[in-house]
Image 1: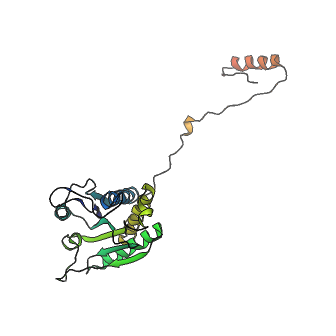
Image 2: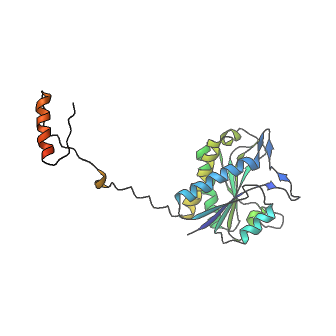
Amino acid sequence: MSKICFIVGHGKSKGGGYDPGACSGQFQEFKIAKEIAKYAQAYLNANYSDQCDLMNYNGDLYLTDRIKKVNANTYDFVAEFHLNAGKGTGTECFYYHDSPTGKKVAQAITANISAALGIRDRGAKVRLNGSGKDYFAIIRDTKPCATLIETAFIDSADVEKIKTAAGQKSCGEAVAKAVASALGLKKKAAAPKPTTNTEDKLYRVQVGAFSKKENAEALLQKIKAAGFDAFITE
């Protein structure tokens, strides 16, 4: 059984204030990313036996705090949720440069988001710093296999796809399905259908039908005399 963590990017600045991430008009990266991650976690936990935690939903953890919390746990895979900026379009996912599993998951994530939202698949990517190490700290400094998901661009037409709860749910579930498929997670067994207790059923017997009420009443008296409950209906 795998242990997974979905992490919301931004939310808390290094100085302790609020860090919204990229912004465009009324839209803030942190607020949209947190909802996408929430739906992703909910889908995995509802449909798979593996445990999936959600970190930084309330924006109370700075980047280094998130890294420490990941490394203090026993996660097999982590993904941090973001929105891109720069007026581009599409979805992309970064992974640890020397991880075939990370690459496989990243490719599945971008393919699923692209199909779900109808946006460009920019692909799975590696980004290195000047020292030849992974650029993103959540990938570079964490122990488990890690990815950073740029779900869509906040400052282009992409945001129309994820500004609503329905769009965020679609995106989140696309990520969850990709992670489950790429990691080979085990689906939960279907709940057994409730059995019907035949002892709760009642069966009625009609003895006869009469055009005259007095004939029906005469038979009713005979049936009652025999010890049965009986009644007349029209």
